[in-house]
Image (cartoon, rainbow, N blue to C red):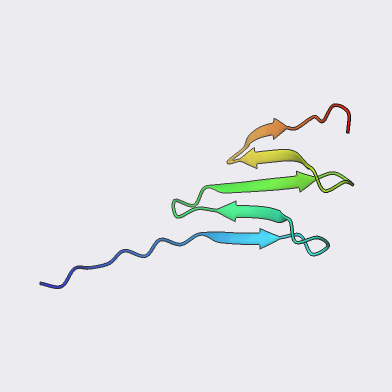
Length: 59
């Protein structure tokens, strides 16, 4: 009997300016969004409403 393969789909979008990851959606539909500062450093990440800030000290 032939196996039935399962398809796992992930979707990604990128910022138009610098091709940084903007959103990622996994196979379960969980979406993660990213926001970057003027130096292209990640400053914000939100996973299904759970928010994280990134703070850079120094350079």
